[in-house]
Each structure stands twice: as structure tokens, then as C-alpha cells.
Length: 238
Image (cartoon, rainbow, N blue to C red; front, side, top):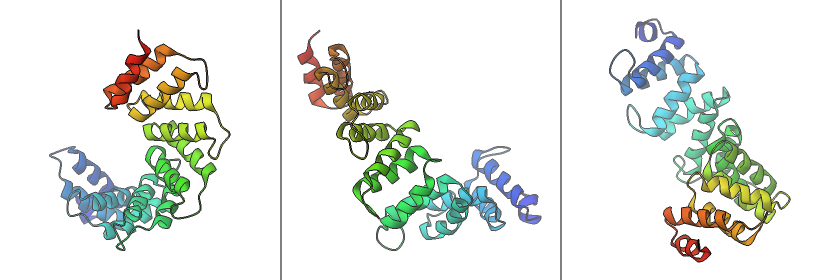
């Protein structure tokens, strides 16, 4: 604390913030972490700005302050902290400042978050690209962003990339690829993807018919809450 608050050392503030947030060297103290990160950010340390802005946005260690979060998050985003670019995007996407959503600004910041913050940043960008939010419809860009999100481990990214592959939206139609993408999303708990993968396996789309795989996919869809999956699994038989 001396290094941060007395000597005004930005690196010391960043270290103090991390220790206070995680409870290293004592009990966790989120208000202290927030003050330390604020001090570190004032000294221009990007990591401190990333954490201070995030704490303001999420109400950690004190009151939620969306407007106050913008400046530190902007500093961190400009220093290539992709998570901060994403958090800025969400502030504008949900209209947390200015009284209404600003999809153009959201799209700008989501684009800066992708691909480094791939799962959520690329997925949010893809939705806006696909739907024309905050700019023109960009089916090719959406397919690329969905793919990046999928590769970063986001189940919905795999589902929507599979839809793009199936429909040839922004990319060449690829039924085999769609079947694989749906299967990947299903295996991470995406009920809708399980149903899509099951139908393709049952009907032989994108590869040979595979009743056993179809039954498994429908069964997973059933377990995940889609009642049609229960009936469709039973229809296939043993």
C-alpha cells in the first residue's frame, strides 16, 4: 500500500489491486482493490485501467458507474486489452450511457475485441454483422466472426457458424461442415445444435446417414429440455 498510495507507483498499485481482489496476503478487499486500480490507472497503467473500468462497470468494490467506466476502459482498449474493448461494446450495446443503445459504437468496439477476446467479442460482433446492427449487413464478416467465436470455445458461435455453413450465408454452402459444427455445439450443451445435428445425421445430410448418432443427438436435445428430441429419439428405435 505504501508503494501505491504514498509513493504513487503505478505498478505497485496494479499489484496491490490484484492482491486485494484475490485475497493474497490477507482477506479479499474489493473496495481497496478498486482504489488501487484507480490510482494505477491514473498513472497510465493499462492493466489497472482494465480492472478499474471493469469494476466500475460491474459494480465490484463500490457502486456501478457505467459513465465513469468509459474513460478507463477506453485507455485499456487503446492499450490492446481486448476485454476492455468488449466491455465498452456492451455498455453501448445495452444503452448503459446516453439513454439508448448505440449499435454503431458497440460494433466498433466489438470489432476491436475480436479475435483476441474471441468467444464473446467475436460472437457479439457477428450478431451485429449478420443483422446489420450499427452498420451494413456483412454476411461474410459474420460467418468469419462466428467461426472465430466457435474456435474460441463459445457454443452459440458454433451453432450460428453451422447455420451459416448450412445456408451458405456469406460463405460457400458446406453441409459436412455444418454437421460438424452442430455436433461440436451439441457436445458443449447447446440443445438447438443437438437437434440440428440429429436431423442431419438421421437424414444423411453432409455425410452418410447415421441413426445411432442421430439417436444420441436427439437424446441429448431431450435431456437439455427440447421435448421433440425425446420423441424423435424414440422414433429411431434401438
